[in-house]
Image (cartoon, rainbow, N blue to C red; front, side):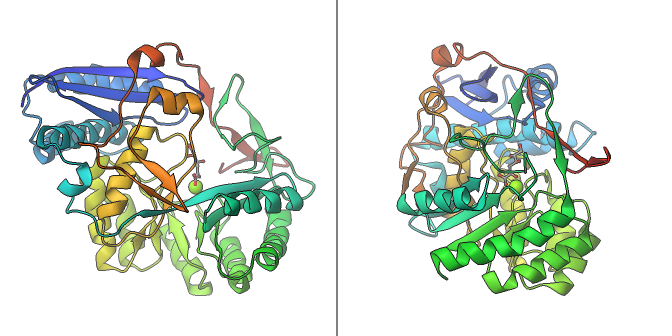
Length: 402
Ligand code: KDG
Ligand code: MG
């Protein structure tokens, strides 16, 4: 099953995606996602200039060997660009293997460990009432786990808060957006806000919250402690992900479960946090952490230490990555939860897929491979549009973690 052709498709059906198409001598097609939000063309170039020329003639069934070849063979290892490129190849090879054997990918990953993949949705509001209404609307659609983000009163452009009735979408086309971040008002507001959410929705709804790397460890420790009465499912990214000692400090001061890792791209980023017992959920994804092959290794390490998966699943992961996440989530023993932000209708049309949502959970479907396709003719109607993630500054102009 030799690879005969490799092609990159960059399109923007509502937001930018980089998609890899591998074709074999038998005419089978495998899809991989290589989207890196705000840096899409860097991955497209890494793939087309440095990876695709190496693939022609390789046996598509040699998935692990190809991974090792692209990782070790480059000498320059890790980093989001390299690992997203390797991920795209890896996921496309799993897709091809499934199609060649006529089975869904989850069968190849060890088979289903559960019937469905529990997902959490995003509630957002420019004020408390709007955020509560957003939670209520998601509950009505069957979600039993909801991430809630609310604008701190007096502030504007908080992370995770959408404007008007639009779904939250961080990357913006056009000029780079600068936001202002103020820690103290947020720390005072967040516990009051979650008290209100609990009061409104009762004890059973799983509540998640993302601090998006904005707090210093001691501030995050204070927040985690203050949120304990409201029984969060997790507090995500309370401090920058590159501070394992910071996570140890937070852990010492709170029993609020901690999730981290959406920006991680290798097991080496995850290792210290996992083995030191500093986190509860690892958020690495099949697209930014080297594909299904590498994500399985991360999950296996996590399993040894009682850490569960909670993979990143924002809209900047294309439907190809979402399908990979669902095959993974169905089959991994230490699954925790999967993030789910629905894509635009245009994105769903460009990437028809077998996965489906029902009653707070998703299923990858039974189609061979990943069960996702890319309509290249339609994709061409949505050309790439330069877009950046916002940046954050403190009120005095100091650059801060976004
Ligand atoms: O590209 C950045 C987004 O994926 C990120 O801001 C979303 O933090 C995020 C989340 O938890 O989904
Ligand atoms: Mg996050």
